[in-house]
Length: 443
Image 1 (tube, rainbow, N blue to C red):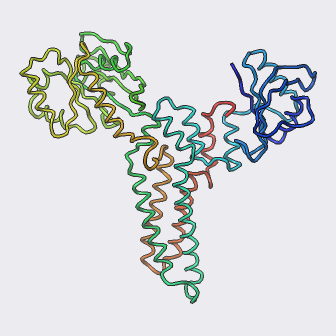
Image 2: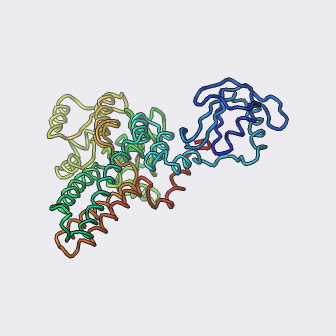
Image 3: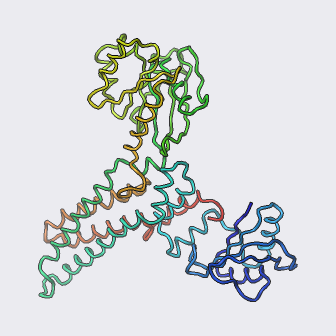
């Protein structure tokens, strides 16, 4: 294989010259095949592709050299030994190249987060969203809002300082209010996206709920395509929450099998049932039942509650045991937009249709990555956007009173700072370590 060694900083030029054993650097941004030499002994180490990126036109904004060497352990050991012998060089920390790119203005904080998400993306949907964010789609939205707010602050300050003079045009403050109202609508709409971007980034949390022996663990195993959970004919086999991560149609799903919902017979099972009865903590629930529960044992109130639960897909198991008359009754229930799936974990009849329903629901929860307006993807975005919206609304309230204009201008500055904390233009020192710690060495 091939390993890429990256050197960034003011010493990169001298290091590259020493490794090449020449007096001049290769042409910028052109791959050159060269022998690399140990700077001390001058012994040849490897034949490699060498690329030179003079700053600021590089990933970090500094002078950067990339050495594409053979990936053998001995070659890498010799290369690192040679580089460590050069004064002023040290091994990079995790994420340090990206951190330098951020401090040198090559990336803003949302683009850095997009790059980190791209590195850790496990599904196609995550990849598309992360790439879009890394390319600056989300950043452009926030920068546009910031540009608008800068003008609003400037015009409000002008009204405060020169409002009584004739050279201030009429209606300047009204124009600011109009722009702020437009921003309020945009930010509110951005916040009301149903956590689509965050769900796609972190995974849609799905719980399989239902009574004992309804086939919950069997469904988990079918979706995972492996025996992730123990299956037995005895009630209460699953006593804890069994979690698996899946890729379904490009969407990440964190699927949890839970203990059967019943009156527990011992403290261990009771704790499992307690953990299972948290449907509101998940994004989506599979309510597992069988035809006998729906058609025979359940009373009308219980049936109605089952069929009208929010964020729930009703999964009716054991349809291989249902006769045609009862199937007609089940089909009649599938009306008014209810999400009901019939399947058999034993024969796998209906599993494909269930997966189609599930994928459509995931698309509804996560949106279509790469299409439409970008979504916020991290909780810190949501927090700062909420602060921004609150300040904008407070500005509009204060503008109703002529003697409150100075305080109104301050609210605009608060809104601007909140957006700046998202992009990293102001006051983000406390979050930098959290963001960069998940990057790999060399990125």
